[in-house]
Image (cartoon, rainbow over all chains, first blue to last red; front, side, top):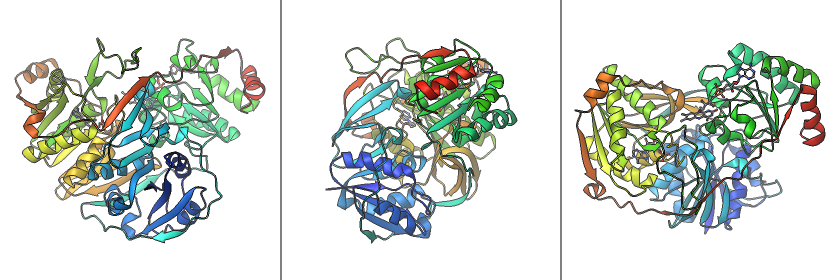
Length: 309
Length: 249
Ligand SMILES: Cc1cc2nc3c(=O)[nH]c(=O)nc-3n(C[C@H](O)[C@H](O)[C@H](O)COP(=O)(O)OP(=O)(O)OC[C@H]3O[C@@H](n4cnc5c(N)ncnc54)[C@H](O)[C@@H]3O)c2cc1C
Ligand SMILES: Nc1ncnc2c1ncn2[C@@H]1O[C@H](COP(=O)(O)O)[C@@H](O)[C@H]1O
């Protein structure tokens, strides 16, 4: 049987999360088809078809699929379900929204946010904010899986899969898209950035956050992250929150500035390759996971850091 | 309209759990337990909707051991009207929770069910979406704003790229995100009052739902640890280490 991987995309471009989830999907050992559900999303199919290991791309293009709402996308996947025994998506907010809806329709217990494929039915997934790792084996006839993309490498380009059109399974009268406010930024995305600099409550205001964090990020070509405290206080937009309930990241370098290191924050960044912590409290728990700790006032050292790099 | 709020009893968010030496699970003996933080946000939102005159009753439901009754009392002390405890000592997976909740919904006929986006113990993030599927109701997940109107509910959702707003027909499912509201504290008089509010005790058998697990937990292990590194004395030392030792600059 075959695995169906739901593509994460913006209708114009394929998101890198798909290539990472593909690596997990291929590890299951079956042929992988990629489903591109969207509107005017032809370019996404072309990109997906080039990913190495993809056997076929299914393209469902309809207005009702434009915003990837759970109701129509889950209905579409359900209409294709007879041909597949495994359904995979990246654990993005889109994947997390859609996949459990599909799973319940299939009477399957979803395996959420896997970090490792042990074998075709056995997976590792973090629980308790990553303080424990569970190895679970599913006994369901079909499998529904979301993938924590920070722990899988992206599949390379090199394929040339055929693209086949499928029909949308219809709209939904019960839900409708109203609008969106997406953050505009030329900066790298948190999920794919090599360097991330994050600010916490210590920044004190959104002006200070801009003034102190942004120049260093610019110099490093880094993405910007934030703790929940900084986001709640309005210093940074919500989509920058790193942590158990925000984004999970694993860059080459993570620089935590004025962040205490609560378990919920650590859950989102402790798999980074190198961690730097700048905090004026030498007892701050963030130092327990930091490779390099600088006990200092961030308002003094960040401008200095910007000059030094 | 009636609002149903499922609340889960979980290990308190301040506790750093320990994995048992025999890898059979995490240590739960003598650990502080609390209402799942997202569920407190759900209770608060339901109360706000009621206070705005858009709902008449807020009903809490919890599936779990006897002590989950305390979690319900916490929500009643915040101001909810009554509770339903589905008593079981089994570990109930999200799919089975969703099936039990479906049965409660069929009996109670709420106009809204407000769940947390995720339980901070299993970190599954699926029960609300599953319940929506089983009921064929629309879903507004990861809500940071909720506006109830006569013809439906507008839900602003925290998504990876920013915010998205959807309009849902009622009845509907909402799951809450952190920035939806700040849960109130229960006052002493309300804690006293809560003791008299009704809590119905039920069993899984009352709902005829099969809760046998679909996932077998083979083991539970410690995550790969991280060693604390070194303290550097200055920015120049930091930059030097990042360039020449770590090779990341
Ligand atoms: C259900 C739930 C989910 C959560 N999810 C997340 C999540 O996903 N992500 C997340 O981050 N948090 C999350 N949290 C919140 C988490 O528990 C912490 O409250 C939060 O991470 C604290 O943010 P902070 O470190 O910025 O603030 P604080 O803990 O207040 O730390 C500020 C730090 O700045 C230092 N400092 C102050 N001034 C300076 C200065 N001038 N220079 C240098 N250092 C300075 C202080 O010493 C302190 O260590 C969650 C909590 C709950 C209950
Ligand atoms: N045992 C339970 N009793 C009551 N509500 C629950 C239970 N398990 C999950 N829920 C609800 O479902 C939400 C999401 O949980 P989960 O899908 O396990 O992450 C929680 O925030 C609760 O609102």
